[in-house]
Length: 336
Image (cartoon, rainbow, N blue to C red; front, side, top):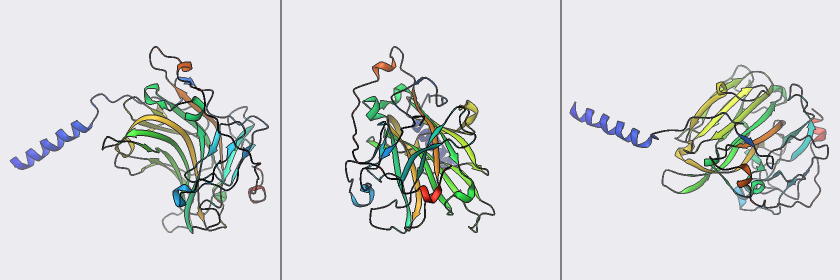
């Protein structure tokens, strides 16, 4: 009995030691000051993306294939780790979008692995929204950054017919891990497809998965049974927590849309570097990914007391793309 009591006291003490004494309260993404240098509403009729040659695949073969793709407005660029989706273009905003919106960004991919090779497994491409490059420096979490985006989920018969991860909405963060080292990690959301062709599911539906809990495992979120727009957001507090929000529709997020708060992988966020999307498919040379549309991507900060947004800005670092883009996907998906 005594040994059990001692063990219980030890475990309780360890739990208290590992828990912040005064954890910061979550705040709704979109609170504070909008950073105009960052984000996109895709309303420019001349919006376009320059592919700039074969995509990167550093994660698989350590080949970045510089200089990498980039949008003409300089706000989006190719991931050097995995490469960009095969189709990136401006399209008319699908029904039910933000009032007055005429343009959104379309993303889809087919050859998502090493150029010239077929992986025969699930692969993914990434498209980054520059934050560090646009602001001129990483954004410390003391500035309480947050990001929001509207995502259009198409009808389920248009999804890649595969149970698994389809789309990611994520942040590129550097934080202090359990060992005390400052390392990158990538919290966010995944949209998973649950296909009726699988023995596990009786009907098609999607599910939000939150990445990640403190132990590194994903947290199962709401199930989605009908197509349409959803709004997603993440906010970051000075104690290093990540706060996740999501709601159906295109209305601004509220406190009621809070899904989860925590320290993904046991790390405490220090700097917000970038925001990005994952587009996944089963790379067999034939399967196109689910066609994704996003709109109204925004980034906000809450300046520390006595500071202004102007004090956050440094001279932005330019990324240049030179080669004209191509649009190989028009005949596969047509217009939305």
